[in-house]
Image (cartoon, rainbow, N blue to C red):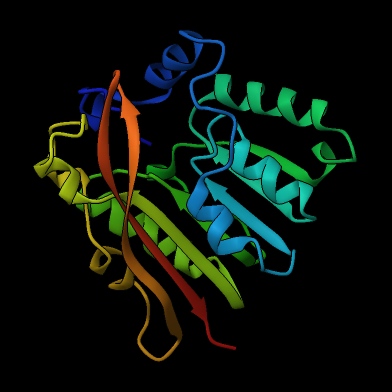
Length: 216
C-alpha cells in the first residue's frame, strides 16, 4: 500500500513497514476500505483472501460478516496489531481469520481457491504487479470474485501527495490483462472520485476499482 511516502518500492520492505507501523498507535483509520464495503456487502460469505491486509480492518469486516479470511501482509507489526483488534472484536471473529506474513512479490496464494480475493492499494512496479495479479486471479474459485482497488494515475496530475514514481500507478487494463478471455466477466472497471484530506489539505482523489467474476 502507499501512504504518500516518497520511498521507492525496493526500500519499502518488511523493516520499512514495521517501522512505519511502530511510528503510530494506528496508521489507518480502523474502518474497512469503502470500495470493499460497496462491492462485497451483498456477496454470500465464503473463503476470502485479503492481500496487503495492514492493521486488519478489511479482514475484520469480512470475518464479522461470516467470511473465513486469510489475511496477508509484509509487516509482522501490522499483523500482530490486526490480530489484537480481532481478539477484541468478539463473536468468534478471531477464529475466522488466519494471519500470514509474506512478501507478496515472492509469494503465491495458498490453496484451495477462494470465493473472494481482494487487493486494496497494492502498488508495485509493472512486472511484479502483473505476476501478483495473475497469481491472485488464479486463486479465485469458479463463481468467485477478484476485487482490485488502487490509486489511479490521475492523482499524479492533480497534486495529490503520492510517491513520485509513475510506474507504480495503473488503470484497469493492468488488472483485466491477466484475466483469461472467456473465463471471466468484468463487472466493474471504474475510476471513482472522493474528497480526502491528506496532510491537512483536501484533495479530490481518484480510485481505480476493478471487480471480476470467474465463470463457473
